[in-house]
Length: 140
Image (cartoon, rainbow, N blue to C red; front, top):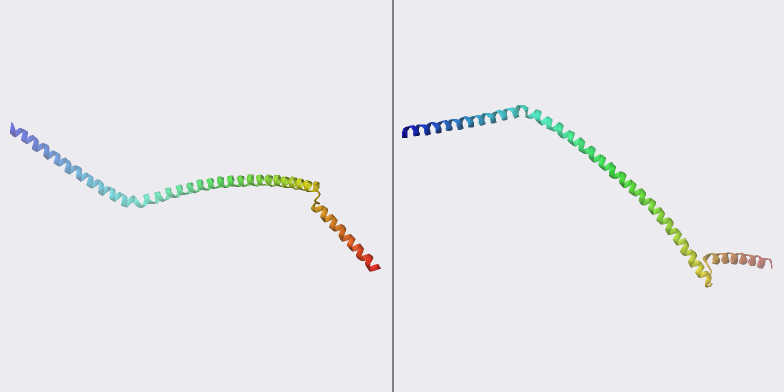
């Protein structure tokens, strides 16, 4: 009986070793086949990758251009709003300045200090009077 068990073990190990050798050979042949196919089809595959890359690049540039255009539109709208707001602020500042000038002039007038306009009017009258006196003085 020991001979039967020993023979089964030897047959099983021989079969397993044969299977491993066969499988290893198939892996080797598959590797050679892959290497050969890559050599034959590699250039075509490379060209396909280039075409695919160009398509992705073109699409990416289109998306970037769209986003840039949208951002520029938003910036232009914001500039327009700022310009409108600036004009409104300047108008309000002018109104405030005129009101301030009017009140200051009114307060100065109440305490007896002449306004710039009053001084200019008086100066013009003095110039007229001086000119008139000079003419009278030349005639005498």
